[in-house]
Amino acid sequence: MATATTKTDSSRRKRATEWRNLCREHLPGYDPWATAAKGERFDVETAQLAVEFFEECLVLIEGEKAGQPFYLEPWQRAIVGTMFGWKRADGLRRYREAFVYVPRKNGKTPLAAGIILYALFCDHEPGAQIYSAAAEREQAALVYRHAAGMIARQPLLDSRAKVYKTFKSIEYPAENSLYKALSAESETKHGFSSHMVVVDELHAQPNGDLVDVLQTSMGARREPLLIHITTADWHRPSVCNRKHDYATKVRDGVIEDSSFLPIIYEATAEDDWTDPEVWARCNPNLGVSVQLDYLERECRRAQNEPSYENTFKRLHLNLKTEQDVRWLQLDKWDRCDGQPVCEGPCWGGMDLSTTRDITAFVLVWRNEAGGFDVLPHFWIPEDGARQRERRDRVPYLTWANQKLLTLTPGNVIDYGYVRREIVRLAGEHDVQQIGFDPWNARQITGELLEDDGLPMVEVRQGFVSLNDPTKELERLVVAGLLRHGGNPVLRWMAGNVVVRPDPAGNIKPDKAKSTERIDGIAALVIALSRALTAGDTSSTYESNEMLIL
Image (cartoon, rainbow, N blue to C red; front, side, top):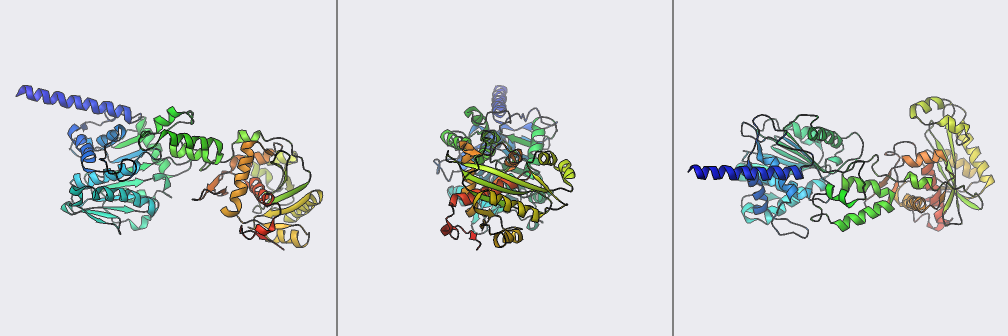
């Protein structure tokens, strides 16, 4: 009998060692054993039970492995075993919050669905309320779809559950328990008594309200668990970045919190983002749900399309970037510093500021290389320029002394002065058309058209009007076909620009998300929109632009 007990203890110790080695390899930088509080222990049998539930009771519903058992990859085994296998001294679950930070296409959604179903059927929490939450209704429905699909493909679970497609909910009558998918309207979530909550794609949450409401709904439960599963956000104040900061500090031992589980797969700023070894370190499901040739294609696209570089880094390497979508690469911009040759027909773009900021007017000419030459002009109110320089930390006065921008009299922009300057420039050059953003521009553009006889064309600021010239500017910079003379004001603005994509892949500059002023680039895009039409007014109505007559 003693021999049998010794063998059992030896086997348990061996399995515990195997689990610890698994976690050391697949929980990056985090050791649950080293961070355990007094009395906390790893229960090998409970961890194995959770893994066996996935592999014996769940079936994958999409992709190449659809219809096959949900065999967990080593990194998934480490997460599931750690999440459910660790116990406090009182026998309840150790971990009460988890942050699973994994790049896109690494199977986060089916993993989340499996965790929810394990809690629903195996936690034995009477009247459990389990929720998956997301910023948008469609995203919230994804986890539910996987969970419902797994139940439908497993008769043992299907016979014990009631699935309500309309309400995106699943009931387990034997325990009077419920799982339901939620979207982000936090004001409707008060009154819950949550046992488990999975927040999917935390970076997409508009604020922390929903997370706060759901987290505070767990107070009456014995062993609640809040799980955040997400890819990276970009650098900004957000609930995702706050959780990432906390998780990083727990992982690194800066904060002692044995109830928080940090799972962080990410690249660092020092990593070479084009290196497949970096991709492998950041993507634990590489070769399974995310393929190497896919990442190779996406990386090539990011290298060829600057507007996609930050998207690739953020979604596929979990590398937080300075902007939502970085656009123009300044090293490539700087290589376009040839002097413009301002001869022949040209096209203009005008971007009017609010009364106290920069107004920009840009002229473009086609050049012999098949690109464009650029001549920008800028105006800013003279009064208060010194204060704005200190506030914005931008050398407006130096630029004014260098005649790179003009100070207009007074403390607000003098549109009469700007109008006279545009008329002067139009008299010096063969201007075919001048495009303008209609916002805040009706009076001056009406005067330029009616009183001064300039060919003014309204360029609406939607994706239809701006996609082609925005992508053309990107192409010109990458190909080195732009000549802007190294203008430092325009360079500053080029480094500030964020572009916003739409679902169809169209892009346009986004003033709201750009870090600083981008008026010159906005005017350049408008000018290119007119040059690309080469004065073809037959297409203006088709492109939702209006030629003012």
